[in-house]
Image (cartoon, one colour):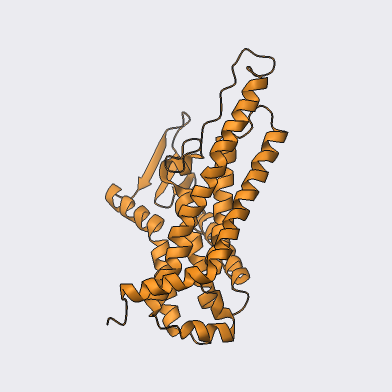
Length: 281
């Protein structure tokens, strides 16, 4: 039998995890659904002319996904924060890789699918109800002849109606998986108060990165030059606004962006695996 990964042993670990946590997961999803219903009902009550537009749907989805997803990820290895539970967890007859894959299966894959299904189970009927109520009372914007159009359903895969970064490259969605991967690592790295310490670490890292780019890199550029993004620099060269650009070759820029966008979660997962192998309680 393979000591690193064996599917039958891993599936038994998944089954054990589900039996121990299914009630908690079910109640959590019901709570998410209830909060979404409450929030959308509040929007319908306070905004009579654009009850649940695309921006509200986008905000509700990603704020909920980030908050609940990070809380979920923070519980993946929460047993390691308690000595007795940690000894019992490390004694489970499964490899470290199988334990990590079990956590990723529930916290990353299943959670994302379940949260999205719950969101649309609430979002679709609430948006349709808001449209019926709105169009039943008003046909035109107040004081104009402009008809009020019904709000469409936000599509997380196309990002239409979301801010430009999400439409162009799903930055918010990719960023969520990157941040969530840090919260999976947190309980393995920190012994006590892992969620708080992980949150502080993520915020400090973001602050240092912003200060480094704005006060460190940009101040070293010649006068008139600015950072357009991580791999492009530009300056306005004349009065009509013509710009000059300095950028990396397209294939290098594409490669670096791909690694930066999709490489952070696997990097944190690998670090989690290495740290888990070294873990003692």
